[in-house]
Length: 445
Image 1 (cartoon, rainbow, N blue to C red):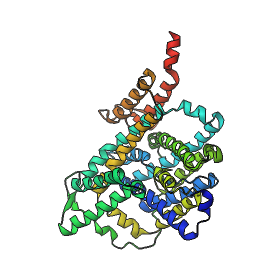
Image 2: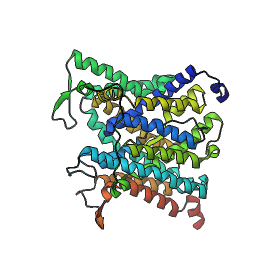
Image 3: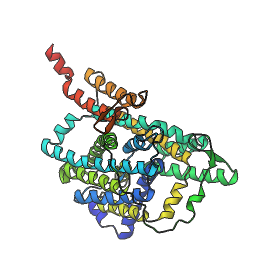
Image 4: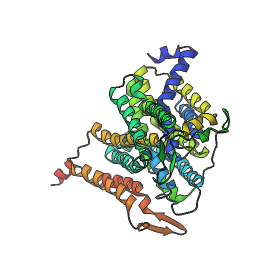
């Protein structure tokens, strides 16, 4: 169906297509606040309004939906985790830690604007040469690997339920067709939740907490008590910490690479070059301001969603208005505390099972990016960049004793052991710039 034909669809069909886009993004989008502790309501209004902000700057020409970013989850965990996060060992409340995380997300969104200026000055082609796939792909791989321990922790609260979730997702991906293949996470959440209800009511099966020391209800229906069907989202004012910003900022590189990839993919699907019209500069600004808006109200970072790119490819409906309707649906759901409370009753083990696939897929996408770009790992330059980035990104995270890589600038303590990704990215860019290409090396000899 062409854009012209899509434009002739009546309000009902447009609404149905919009719902389809909302369901495609829903499972992954609500998973981010469930894992990080952010609000489902705020997340939904963040992605809804954020998508509309993106469409405004993209002149309403790009059929892209902005969901909550998994890449930034690693940054949120590095700031808020009670055992290994930036504020571990302090008496700071978790809500305040999240406020610092969202403040860092707000600033990270503004980095898109800086990058848009750079792209405008040097051009897209030169920019991609400075930050090639051999640098961005290991960054994505590191994000997935850094998140992996949290998937294990969550799954361990009720391992059989996590396995069921993972099995449903794998089955949908491997054997599903049409929309089934596009919404595997949502199907995994719904299917496993149905099993959890049976386990809870028919057999009285319980779970343990993440530390494995306290038995808790498998499904906690107490969260539904007193919740109203309609109400304002619990917006949260961001707080700012230089260290939190330094930790979070590098994750923007992964979502920027994802953004560029999705613009190229959508261009290929629709036959229109969105990197030229409306232009990569405008789409980067829209994406960045969407992330800044979400951080400003206490939500996670936003990013263009591959799930919705898949819906566009499947339906051949290229009209951006359909995606805008989906954004309005998402923002509307944000005003139901009862709906959010139902989402919060999903057992942690189900979230862990879904995270198994999602975190692994993040790392796998990084590998796929190198394969698609035909990165030759037989070349010394590429091998050095990837090897050094992986060791820095993972190794510094587990440096012992704690604080061994820290130093002070005035009253600010810079903890380098929490900045492995940032340092890995910087080193990768430098190595790419200074190391000779294989052909240059031969000519020199």
